[in-house]
Image 1: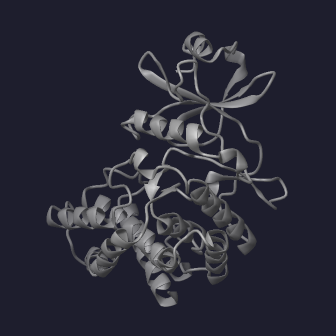
Image 2: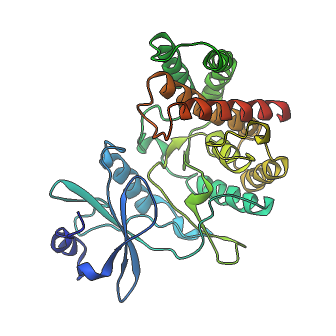
Length: 342
């Protein structure tokens, strides 16, 4: 639907005068329908919100509106392009059956992978600075965007249920993976202990490298983007997702089993950034938990891939029948590598 029939109402809600010729499809995101809008005064990102992925968009807008009101995000050393508030005071605008939002456009470079450890350091530094910028906010006022999203105990129990009701024979390679991931219950127990000891903080919860915009020379981070998953979480979650996606030698779809391992230089850069930025703010227990974070985030992803395979591939998009099984094996090998270094 690119007729832009929503534009008259959108213009009214934001005091704009946009025309269809200014609105161009943008990016390769798989969740929201995204457009770039070149206005004489400024360039914007316009999104039609995907309600099938985020079933409670009002929770995301609630969290964003709290950030706009109470967070000193202008003091961050990078841009933080939160959605713009409409004339009604909301960041999300309902037009007919859809929700729309508008954010400032930030020009720069998005990386799909990290080649140099210094870029790993810059990425981790930015995400750690974002966590600290929310340090004085009332964390209890923020809502969980996706309930149980990073709950290791919940994901473990979902795996056990999938094993009981498996649509695939549990034998051979499948049995190997089931045995491996069920034997990681000790990580679930460690997670439960840490939850009782560590403070909740405002975390990004999707700290992939392509959720940053770098300067053209790749010497600095210009913006942290993809802000839908910002919600209460633990420092080790954001660090751990960086480890899983930045410090791994191969992407999660790789089946080059012998080439999957932790890049120790990138891992060290990620850890150094979190300890540098968090000094005096993160507790000693939080700093100690960082090594757990890499293992935990890799393990929870392995749980989810294997669960989906056993359930008949109903959640993740796949290109072939065993792709989720192979993704789980990929995460198993990465987890084994992490367990050897931390």
